[in-house]
Length: 179
Figure 1 (cartoon, rainbow, N blue to C red):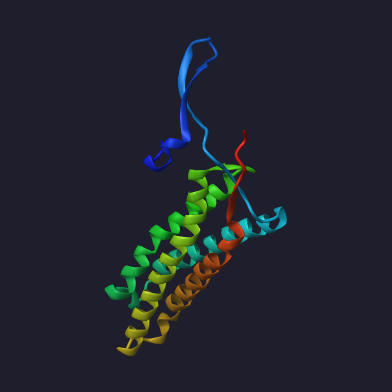
Figure 2 (figure 1 turned 180 degrees about the vertical axis):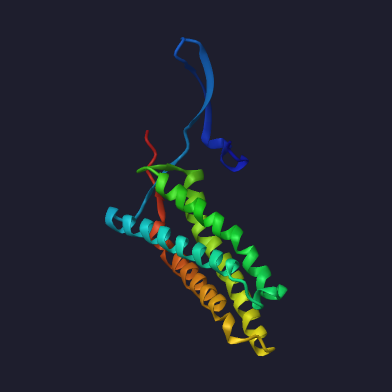
């Protein structure tokens, strides 16, 4: 399904199917994009995004699985729960990154680059909010036995910051139009 933003990039064409019957299908006729980075840099960027997204997701899930008094405070656990949505969006960005060919249509280009740029920042902000809540809880008397939650939250912060920093290796350029 195509959103309204990209509907102008598609044209309806009649194409014969296996039985010779004409079938109307949308065919992409919009601009194509390719990665600006060289192949070796692109492979490293893909692997880095995969590893960092996996590490951030693992740290968040580990945080949720630890049974501790610290996570009974709403101002600590709520940002962590909200972090699950940006993590899923980063995973969809990784999926689009690994399924992209040499050239991609405009909608897939936007899905990859915008997801890594935007959702890594959202994940970073939510993790920092949870970390600030954890610091406030420590100041109010939470024990040091809850340090594993703080370490996992810090790992998620570092991973999301590195994903945001590495988004420049995933920039794309428009291919010249064919005449």
